[in-house]
Image (tube, rainbow, N blue to C red; front, top):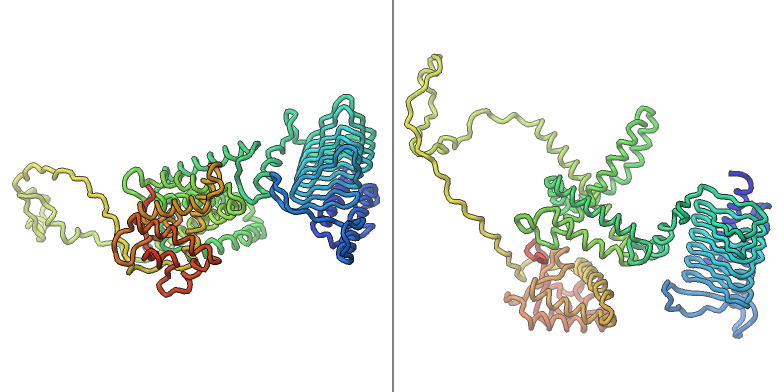
Length: 582
């Protein structure tokens, strides 16, 4: 990388400082912090930052409307980005979380967009996009920059054209007075485009005329910004393919290692606290272990194997968590339907739905990885302990079990005394014994299906937090389903109430209740009928409308009843098993 490229990167850092000023408008950027080679871009950025700070001071010190240089905060708009706030200053257009656009015939000293794209059809000084694309079709007196986006120029730019983690495209009317720099991207230049400086590519990842990081731009814009791993958006087919491929891989792990999956699931269910503690200890000790291996020098050769083992544990842990979640939903029925691979597919389908929910998607992803790693790690610890205990115990006796004589069939004789010949040390002798009759196995009768457990009000009552966790899961699932049905998009609460009433009558619980082992029962011991389920669903509106006091009442009431529980004569108990979804 030559000095000219370093100069362009210094411009990038200066423009990122502009983004910091935009995010914290009360802070001004001190002059002279940019390198001398970046004065052309840094001075303009510094002037814009100082003007923004001065405008904020005018806003705080004056109450008169529409003063020159004052920033006007607009209300949130309903654009497709759905974010948030924008502000306009005389000579500047700055947006956070949405795109900026300078129309033809207008002038602006800077067009800046953070978490959005910047488009300039008029006369601008600088055009900058952070986490977005830059498109310039009007004259620019300074620079056009795109960070984590593509940069398209089809007009005169007196300064530089820079794209970081994106490609630069120059149209037939493009004329660049400075340099064209693309970091981790390509440069596409029309034959009519004029570049007075140099064209530099740093780690060109442009493949086949398409930027090699276009998939990353789409994922950042539609997933990372919203805090979710997946989204229904164009350009994310690779993400869904990867997610479905991993789900198939987890199902194959469950097919090949059924016993290991079942053992880890049992550890998670029986000792959740120890599982979480083991995950925390394992995560904290991993970097310490790697450092110790590197310090010993000899252990450096083991580092790749340790990292590979940890990676395999993480993958296996994801399969364990999906099997646990799917088993909770399906009820772990006997036969092929209760195989861990089926549970993995069911749990994976639920997790994929949660992955598209903003913020919740990343939260679910991290929790699955955390508890999955802990379940595998603690299961290995328990197995090592059991092996040590077995090695320290006495070997089992070689004598036959006490009831071995009773296992002989009709006509057989068994004696605990040794044969006379054997007692005298004589050679082996075969005593004449009656030939046993032909044995006929009893007819095979299939095992009766397990009886469904009965839940009564005498069981332990569910507390406030576990009920709120189950309710949150139900709200997310119903909200996602309703979002796919546009005619019912404005009736989320009504659909949630209908969903609750149907599930309480048919299964005695909801999907969230199945995950958290919750069951709705009547105080008088009778089964929940349609009248009780409907009254309880309608009572939820009363618990909701009074500032959620009806739900908060669970934490205050000695019987752990919400208002709708008291109206319907029901309680929520917590007991494992017995309520499969299917």
